[in-house]
Image 1 (cartoon, rainbow, N blue to C red):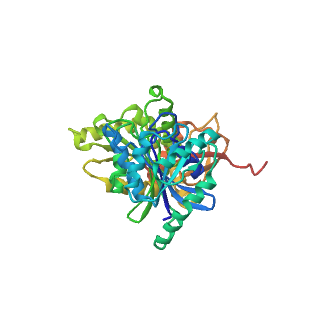
Image 2: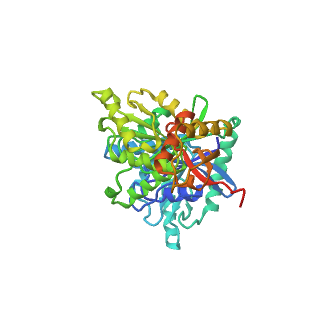
Image 3: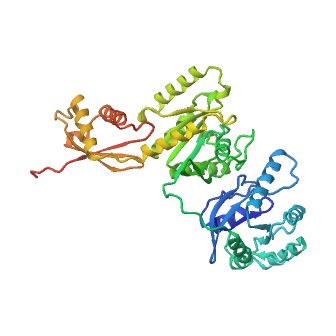
Length: 447
């Protein structure tokens, strides 16, 4: 693993802006509201010729009065424990605050090397204010501007000796993992247990959890392996109905969740089993299917369900009614709190991924087509007989099948297309995977 740097500081000093600058893309949400970042994010950073793992953390308030502030502080300090060096960021415009002094005192007791950086140093006045940071007792501050990319060379020189020492201490690199890494996005409405599921799978309290809805704001990527298979787990913010989203920050969180779905291979839709399957759940499921993702429904809090058989039957009925275009979607009942059925969920995810990634040989595909057409011939279109002559798979992830026929076949009714799609899924075990059928008119050999 490369050396690790953790950005530490009080809320709203520009930690996420600096994180985005160093990783080269907008991974972390940025807003004027204090306390936007909650879960620690990680990314591969580049700074001059340096390469390192970078952690973005929540605003640190060591003596936070409420429980949420204390939980955020614990998460930030865990990031510092993981790091080889801390990057303590202050706001040069506002000068040194009592909270900065409190954090500096805390950092001196951690026995971890710390580089002090004064952000928002766009002018001479800010640079002079940055000199006040000497009083924190953490050495000479590095003046920089994360927003404008100023002072990054000086920051690289300040970090260089610590990163070099960390590389010398690092054990030999492990063999590279298989590139076939499965991106698994955990999505759903707020407070369904998404972050708790990720923590259970990882075996540690990596993500912030609690009774408050909407704790997760960023989409958090975490590398993990299960029974020899490599995963990137993506925890996302809860998705509410669009009409209920009025705050700009929540809109940004929702957009990050949608982008996480678009980048995923398999989507786990977490639903609250005590609330069955609501319309927003099916809206999220349809979003994943429209993006061509494999889908599994995880019914959490199953230990609270009073009539399990009736509840499961109702969930499957609603899936069949509202997601009819995909056929059967796997439904896994689980209790994250009790750790029940998590292995079953992961087995289902792996099976779904293998189906989603499948390539069907042309021979079996055309034998299926001949049998399906013989069993149920296509209807006439405009008084002309439809003929489907040939099938081939043109891509996977998700499977896309190209059917060649005459011109009437291109205009077959939706009911016949659904018949072919359903029969194809049954024949090749593609339940839970969106399959695309495209019709193409074959060339006329007499033209």
